[in-house]
Amino acid sequence: MARILALPASVFGIWLLTWQLWLGGLWWLGLAALLWRRWWPGARLGLAWTGSGLVLVPWCVLGYIDRVEVLTARYLAGGPEALGMLDLVAVWGLNLVMAAVGLVVGLPEVAIETSLLAVPRGPALEWHSDRFPRCAPKVAAVVADHQRAARGGAHSFREQRVAWRYGEAGSSVRAALALNPVTVRSERDGDVLHVRATVPVDYPAHAPLVLGRFAGRTLVVEEGLFHALEARGWLMPYTLTYTAEVPIDSGPPPMCEAWGIRVARVAGVAPF
Image (cartoon, rainbow, N blue to C red; front, side, top):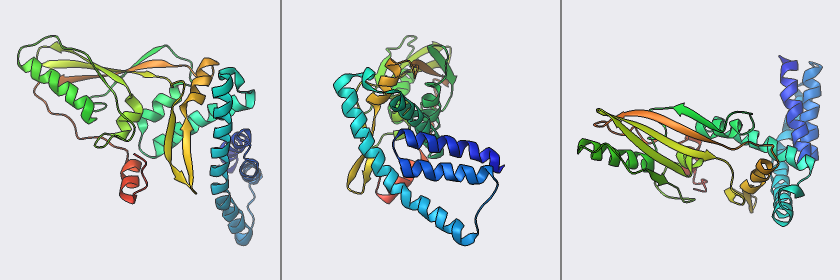
């Protein structure tokens, strides 16, 4: 088991080095070496090692902020070709790290959509889900309009494009991150609507996503850097369609939200 854990630890350490986070990368590579040799120091040294890792966390976050500013400036000045090989590796790895974090904090749709950008596949995918994205209030409102029209005898419905503004109150952040924007279409089959919600899974050319504040600095994910990877062929955009069969007399499911977002809101640290 220790040697199995050594592999992801070493990969994570190498990835930190591509961000020029030298101390953090060396810490993880050192941990990988300890795990590979199946050796761990005594309690006192082990506590010191763990403590040093915790101390390095804020240093790595601040170093990431600095590096993102450098890469963003380079990309905006010279376009996708301005990024070097190590820069591409760093941002490609960040895409997967974001997917992993999304899965942990309760954003499974974001995690899956993000991960699939790095996987060779067709340009269009479908995913059946009777709950998501109808659990987003904005999408539920569109489906409810179609249901009311169907109960009135309509068989055709106007497709509607749904979008979210950053920091919009009363909306599902979980849905907004996975769907912004999404086009909702419905077709009637008797007393059932076949609902299709299609979202383009790609990154905009320039869009800073603010995650919060850290030590007086703004923690940002610049989506334009991922757009540069798409332009260079490292990430592969696609469209994803969520499908559902919805009875015309049924109500919407409860609103969905990531547990991590709910906790952040209660703690007063959510940026949205």
